[in-house]
Amino acid sequence: MTENEKLKIVYQDEHMVVIDKPSGLLVHRSKMAHGVKEFALQILRNQLGQRVYPAHRLDRPTSGLLVFALSEQVLAEITKQFSEATITKTYQCVVRGFAYSGVIDHPLKDPVDDRRLLRQGVTHEARDSLSEYQTIEHYEMPWAFGKFSTSRYSLVSVRPKTGRRHQIRKHMDHIAHPIIGDTRYGQGVHNRLFRDHFDSHRLLLAATELKMTHPVTGLPLELQIPPAEEMKVVIEALRTHQVTE
Image (cartoon, one colour):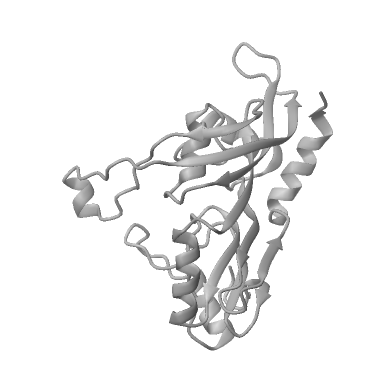
């Protein structure tokens, strides 16, 4: 983001704010991101002129809905909903291959952020991790790949039932459908194809839907946004080669 750019606010009242976080923007400072000067927390605080409290996190390369509380009391209420898994988050992603629908039940270890602990070989224990996914569209692109004359991809909707770090990225890779643009868990050859053909340089993963109970009023709060424009452009290009079944 440039110095004068503002974050897009999707929802705001006196208790909470929900933004559409751009891909590439950290939520807050991290020991693993030295030298980074801009964070969603800082930008939103300056934009609103008051303290804000992130209620959850999105990976740096992921775009989409991100919730902030405007007080510690409201933060506690939202955090409780996340811990009790009463908040439903839905993501869209473009993955390699023809995915279908199902449940991924695969325990995951949270990454270790402290470099000192990493050097010591410290790891976390794997914890139960569950994601539901459903394919929206299939595409078959005229790009030769290995012994195949075409390359296949899918637009997938994913609902994580647990909140592990990098859960969707790891889970989609686990079922052999890595997300395009994922430089950690994805496949470089497909990432390069999307860079070469679509000039796409981001992770094609976006948080597009959020359903929760308002932490103060107790009323249902449902928010839905499309993927960010640079991701929408790629999806529209893929749709020129959509496969209908």
